[in-house]
Length: 366
Image (cartoon, rainbow, N blue to C red; front, side):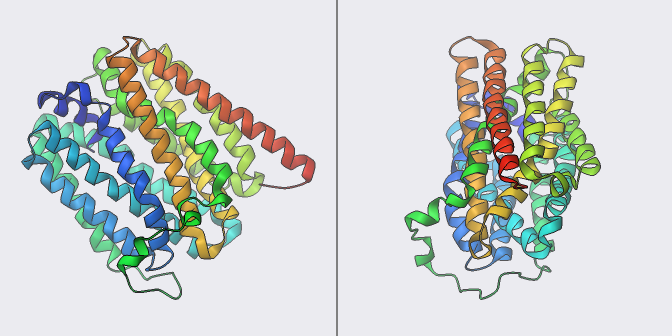
């Protein structure tokens, strides 16, 4: 709900040169909190960690209207990142706990289906609220939605056996608890893929305005609807054909989507890129989650999921900062960021094709 309107909001506060930090600060704290959320998910339980993420979302949405300086806003974005740093880690582990392994890809697709539904409705509703009412109304409504998620979590049973009570010493991490080597392959692929998300989240609202599109959330709505359709049509594809082949195809589609964005000088091309982008992530997200769960040990599943999400946050954060810098300081335009995103996605595609061939020779379905 918030993302499409935040660049203009920060600009009105006098912080135009910090637009790239809107996403970068959020993903920074999300990234550094991942190892802790992974450990806590595997010790105190899935539900408490999910609840913490929702509470942070609720509080930040409520506080945005009261912090009216650039630095106050940026500090709140930094804190807001803890929501994404905790809840998705525990949620993915929770889903992996409650479904059989042979339907894991389908289950992650179902989880992504609901996530994508919220993401498709959110930007359009958020822009409408900001235009029809005010930014304060947008912030408060987003806070109410977070509160509703907390109420749902109160009724969810815990799936972790041998829960431990929360202790401060759980925040002390060993080296192996920071990065799970079992998730190295998904980490590398997702890091390269997610750079494009950082670029899109940062630059798509500005590109919308330059094309005369007043609702800056429509790009996000179109790509999320495309993602929804793909999830419905191909929800069991990675369970049938393997994680790596599906990821290779979806990442190639991402290359095409970012390439179209580099030449998107009309609304038709702009929305074509949104459809390709959505199709790609509609296959990418559930497949890479299922792949990570496949490679992980059930006792350290939260840690593996946290490692995967570190790649997501790092890629988005780097993509956001670099895209904002290229656009604001080097006068290279948005095309340079979108082209770089396409190149990195191409590297991921080539790696997956190599891995696919390697697995076929070894007779492994992955």
